[in-house]
Image (cartoon, rainbow, N blue to C red; front, side, top):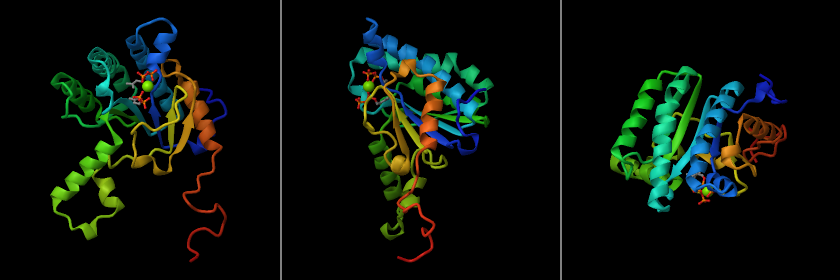
Length: 248
Ligand code: IPE
Ligand code: IPE
Ligand code: MG
């Protein structure tokens, strides 16, 4: 596989995507917005193949936000169907054969129809022992909701406030074992985070592209990884050899 100049020694462990622009993609072609969601599923599959080509450990995708319930009911229903019928049923076995572990982050018990939760559980159970790639679907996900849920869990655990630190909060997030994303990609030319992974993306590199999500293919993922590899991640340090260990 030609990885287009990507340095195989500096592959990010975890890439996260805000899959945006489905509606505009459809409107541009005179189609109803829902056709964009259908086409977006194909893009997600190709991006997952690209993640396997690269050897990523984790790919996290924003599929439905806690705010997306505000859309017209017919569009919400269609989105739930695309996720549950296309991704979690039609694609599930293909992803399973490719060694992809499917998991979910979000509020699964809030507003989500029971039949969708059932499909989510089935896909997660079927693929739970796979090791090639973990595909985390952020579904009914909100970054603020995740932090609220963590705070509630910590408060009800009875832990003394003086014992709470950043590790305590991390342990109560939806996927505490998953490392923070190294790279977050947002498609469709929008420059915002839209309540995605607020805690986790504190030090992620952000790459924005004008490509509308249904047109996104693995080559665009490789482009974003190349851009990531050209960045200098400093984590608050100066980047010089004097960093670390020298008291200021
Ligand atoms: C992303 O595409 C899919 C979801 C948010 C669920 P949009 O539906 O937001 O498409 P645009 O941004 O309106 O073009
Ligand atoms: C973010 O896209 C949510 C998902 C991709 C699931 P939106 O289209 O909902 O975000 P805004 O409304 O443009 O910020
Ligand atoms: Mg959008």
